[in-house]
Amino acid sequence: MNKPIYRHLADKKWRSYQRAILLQRITQMNVIPDVLPLIDPIVKTELSFVAPAIPKRRRNVAHGEIIDSRVSEHPPVINIQKYDKGEKLVTIAVVNPDVPNVERDSFASRCHYLACNVPITPTRTTVELKSLTLDNQVVIPWIPAYAQKGLPYQRMSVVVLEQPASEKAAPGTGIVPPSMPLEISDVKGRVQAWIAKRGDFCLRTVVNHYRLSPIGVDLFRTEWDEGTAGVMQRAGIVGHDVEFKRKRVEPLPYQRLKEERYR
Amino acid sequence: MIREQGKLPIGSRRRRRAIASSANIPFEQLPYQCFQEARALLQEDRNEKLELIARYRKRIDNLIDTVPVTDADKLRKEGRLRDMRTKLEATKILADINDPLVKKRFEDGQGENPS
Image (cartoon, rainbow over all chains, first blue to last red; front, side):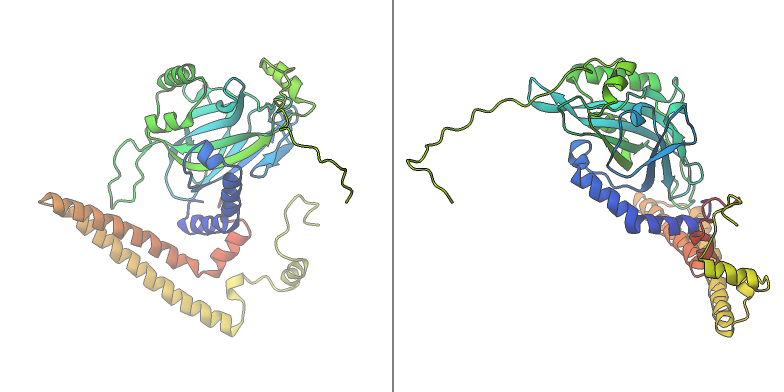
């Protein structure tokens, strides 16, 4: 992908069908107003899960597919294909906007993964989330996707955010300015402070503070299945035996008619 | 069998038989008059585009060398440079897009990682 003509043809092919499907899924699943106000995908994302025990078996994920909890227990592999030249540093965030908040009878967001300073080029597209370094890339390590019993499917949105350029682009030269790397200890401190203050994770705050811009998005969903309790116990997440039930709504009184009506 | 050797077969079975049973001429030398005339025309067009690319490059270099005086001149120069750059990139794509080999390589998946 280092020739502009092949990038152009591949971009055209992606935009003709797969990008349209991605946008349809993102809009139908309401990722767009819930996680970020607007996403215009310019990079192609392909998500897949690899079980560490059997590295050859790869579970490719279609946009919006419901994945077994045992498959998403380990961090996925994302193929990010960018169609313009140059190297960029991106931030990858996996956000679940469907965490139930029982006191407020509403939903909150939880961040299942956050990593910054991931380099992508048109030729180096594979990002293995488990291989990113802890000290200068990973902010929040991978929490497996889980949906407690009784909850509807939980949407897990994977958002690829571009870090701003460190210097202004000289207009005519065609040289792509390098992206600004983020200071990981600073990001960790701020994100934890925001989560502690708000109670949940707001991706909008991170994006606005660090001037990130969304360039790619992907989506998969989880439901309660037989393996979820085990996954939650192994990851040390509290609440594997909690079941959510709907509040009983008293039925409205209605007048019974005098005679029975048979139709 | 190609599949048994672990390679992914390219093209339909009829096409693979046709290629295997013919003399091994490279695709662009196939002896069809219309095809060769069209190729000659496309080569002329590609050469024109290459001249245009060289001309645009020279214009961009000349413009970078100028020194703008007022703020308005500076903005105008930057705008012109940006637009010239966009046009140059578009002409680069136009030079290659009609080449049948480029299209073939892309559709066979070999434009992805030319190694």
